[in-house]
Image (cartoon, rainbow, N blue to C red; front, top):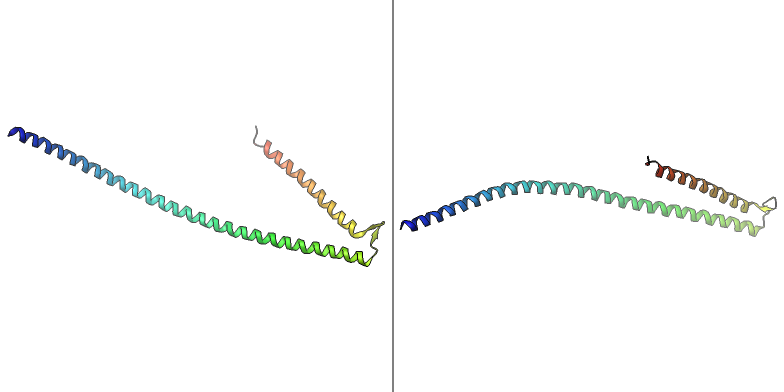
Length: 143
């Protein structure tokens, strides 16, 4: 009978040891869960703040896109109207056979060519400036 009692006692001690181990693990898990919960709360709060800023940036981007589209449409409309007025002016002068000549050249054609040449010269010099700045940008970081 003592052998059974000792066997029962060893089983009871094992059971107690297991229960102590389980309780210890449970306490560790709870403290780990608490730390995990705090970490999760912080991450959730961080995600909320970042998502709010992303939403605001997206709204600002949409507003900027709409503004740029409106600017493009307005600019194209103005250029279209100016071109129509230019063609109407040239057509009117052609039909009326008005004699606007400068050294045997029509004045409006000379004006158009002068403006076009001026724009081309400006474009050429701006391209040279851009290339020089780009070259300086490339050689700047080298030692």
